[in-house]
Length: 191
Image (cartoon, rainbow, N blue to C red):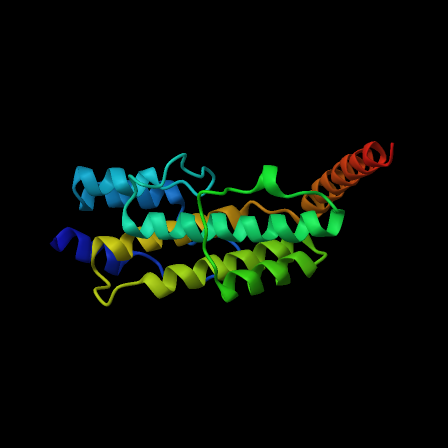
């Protein structure tokens, strides 16, 4: 346990506004590996921000709550986009997750109304960060706090990969693809 205390005390402070991580995720994992037991380390490395788990039932309570929230947010964004394009959303929704939250609706609407893809992602990350902060226990030196730090570090690491120009090009390409698909669906419905 003393190793975990030392690890938590030695990690650099991070904030949702950070553009780059102050410690690489790999360096963080190396430090954590020496400070915690194997089961805790496996739990730490099992969370991957880029991969929604197929099943949520075997996750820890923090991870399960995060993914429930994330899927509910994505469902809300899907509903907004489907309505805007006149498409039925059913095929795109994760029906096994139902979370009614005014915060999720507000965050999704703010992101949906934003034109700049980078700002969209920043707004979504603020919501994710707030969720994790709300789950932070009073015991700052416990494994849950370390897991929250790991999740937040992944958010910052992902943010550090964004390039405004490339992001805009990718966004425009995807947007045109979506518009093309919507027009095709519309034309098929007219016939």
